[in-house]
Length: 104
Image (cartoon, rainbow, N blue to C red; front, top):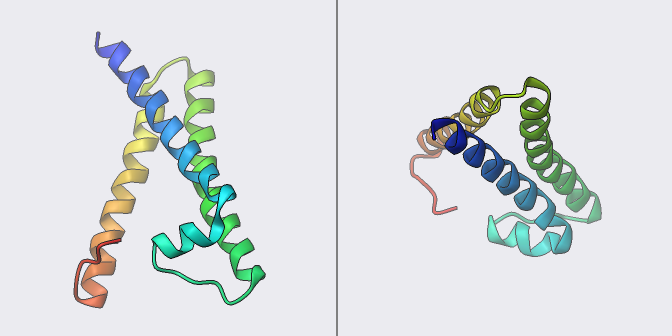
């Protein structure tokens, strides 16, 4: 049962990262507006697309590849945990730097 939950969690998170990254392709300005950013020109939109989509889909594909080649879910979950922990940690660090926790 524990093994099955590990695989379900790993596949679910891979799917989350892939969908989150690829969803930007459908409407870049809407995604920028949702996170309260703006691009001065198309170069800024392309840079955002490169960074956000590249990061999120890269993490999703990495989760799947690690799981495929290692034949276990454990290493994928280590990657997922370290990425999510980094997001949380630097959200807190950013909040401390600006003085408050944003709603984004």
